[in-house]
Image (cartoon, rainbow, N blue to C red; front, side, top):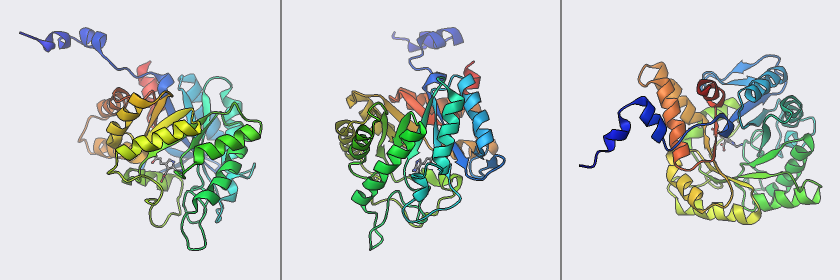
Length: 320
Ligand code: PBG
């Protein structure tokens, strides 16, 4: 009789035949930095995650480096917002200041990455600028992304994470970087990014002013084939790394990406995925540590080469 159970009978044999493992070097910690904060501030819908001050950011970067994480992804929470998201391109805007601080602290230990999107900086909360009728204007937004890409590269960002879902964004920012003397700055395309309810807690984390939704630019959760189209476009436009987001509800899209991509494929375990595990665990309904591990091993098994996760530091500590 064929007996697969032979390879499951002890922890030692199970460990030996495990097909997938987690490594600290494959984990990237998203980090929120709030302008004007003098101490870290909790985010109620994401227990254990904070908006950092510049001082606590330094400590978080040092800890991430010490734990051997692959990188951090920075998000800025500005004090003032306007229609074009001026804070995003201001060298003294919070995200660019935080980038300089993080790069100085990180040295060569990990890759400091930045979210390249206007939504944290616009008073209407959209990922682009609006036209006279209030719709998100794709090509006018690309102009802002070019400027934002240059501002981030100048601040020292080592990987630009383009999460705005405007058509042509990777190509536009690539051109701007190449023309601006930053041919060596790589681009992470949030290629297949879906209009997801699982971003809910993130909106609190960055104090988003969004009214309405992002369905005219982020993808419809119903569409798998369209994910492939977006991934291929980003490869064509010169993305160095592709991303699928959210992770756990889109493992089919992630597996497609892993199969077709000649460049690394990452996944983002987003705020709502984190919040669901935390809420269920707080109620005693699931075993927290096992659920965290299983969620990340599933994302890795589906084909992610690296994962952005709010659990990055905790998991790296547990892996020691
Ligand atoms: C856009 C951006 C979002 C997230 C990362 N980048 C929000 C959105 O698209 O609405 C969500 C991340 C998360 O939920 O953890 N700047």
